[in-house]
Image (cartoon, rainbow, N blue to C red):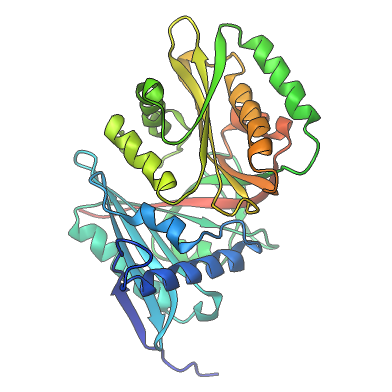
Length: 361
């Protein structure tokens, strides 16, 4: 069988100032295609987001340059290419994605898009390229992470990465918690964590962050790239200040997406020591997403992770009672956090591979 050649067009995506701008049509269509791709891969709509809720993430940011191209085949938009360039110091890292509807797989579209990714990285002096992809479970050969934790199928996406010189560095578990189920275990765990964390208290807020918590929240957010398990992946150390917290919060508040932060505070010093984030779209019947969770190293061993997670879930159930479940991601080697999640009732639903390539100078 001979496959007819396709006409591939990669076009820079103009980011509109608002979703009502005259030039917003391509952005809106990109989001529609993005949502279709995620549903095709995962088999559910929990990763769907409305165009006006995604737009704030793409607004200009002095700490990161975010480049996006739409991918069209024979005149029809079928996907997107993204390259994120951190502007922390002399960063050598680029994060990228190529997302295509299944109908065009195997026709050379992805490889054409990847040429753009690598060219862009080189033009911007980036030598460490990193990317993530979901690998739905399937029979057949599997690839193991060098961390010794987890495997993924040797599927279409995995073969694409290997063909272009990437190595699998880490596997992340995608877990879900049923918000419609019983909460007795959550309450029991919270009671135990409260008893074990004498000297700490729970504080909560919805973005924007209150002034009294900005400094502590900024420090905890800065530790996400240094304290969380990262295998051999490379991340630039981040500096967080009040302006950066405000920018972070605005990505949610400007989109009308409620973000709940549950933190543990050391009573004697007032220091924030652990935190957990939960967010949902304007449609409160959608899935909830758990964003960052961290316990600062100096405060581990007091069940603060369990404390903030359980306290957050109990508040969230009352805030968004129609949300069906919470979605979260953790490195497979992050056993302490997975132990907490499993005890609460999170169950694995998917796995992602983290891939890395170091370019020649």
